[in-house]
Image 1 (cartoon, rainbow, N blue to C red):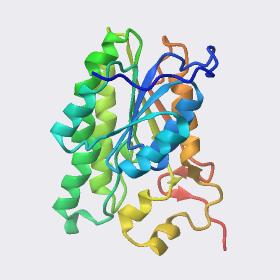
Image 2: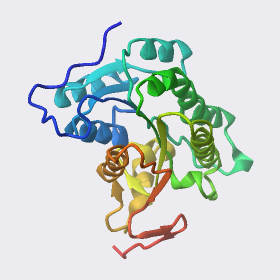
Image 3: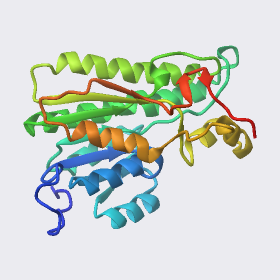
Image 4: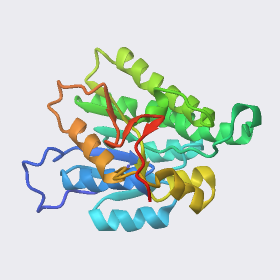
Length: 262
């Protein structure tokens, strides 16, 4: 089986990721792409997974990574992806998304199913496939990009909050089940993050998407979350960051956001 791309000879030997292979899902945009860039800069041998190969290939060329097609909702795609990897030290389960903002009384069950397939079932599918490699590495890292929506509910968010609560529970359960294995289980739970696609995919209208952030001084951006992910992954391996909640200063809680008048 072909292995991941080789590290550049110019990569300093003292970089924390040197010699470690990191898989990043949902790497074609947003937090996933920012995480891939940051981990490559830290010396990791990065493998990118997503459906949009045009974006993935461009990013891989930019940062010296390997791009592989990955559809987490397709068992055959996950099997082929996992089978092409000779080694995995880090899995960043980042792929996900929200696809509606409807109240439960008006729930679109197709949207609910899509949300669960991507955020939950796909994450479980790939985690199960790569967990043996993470254990075999002797110092594996299993990281979940969760959300504060996985810690608290809010109106109009049930499909997404339910899915992210499931991701939170998945991380907690794996932390217990892997307590005697050489694998850290980490969850990063961001609050308001402004990326190019997340809110637009959810509300389907650019003006409505922009309104979510209107008046909020400095919402988080993808690079802020990538910084947290890289920090957690580059701690000494006996240090397990179980859960890191990160919000912009303007967001004290899910419903408490300071907005300046425009």
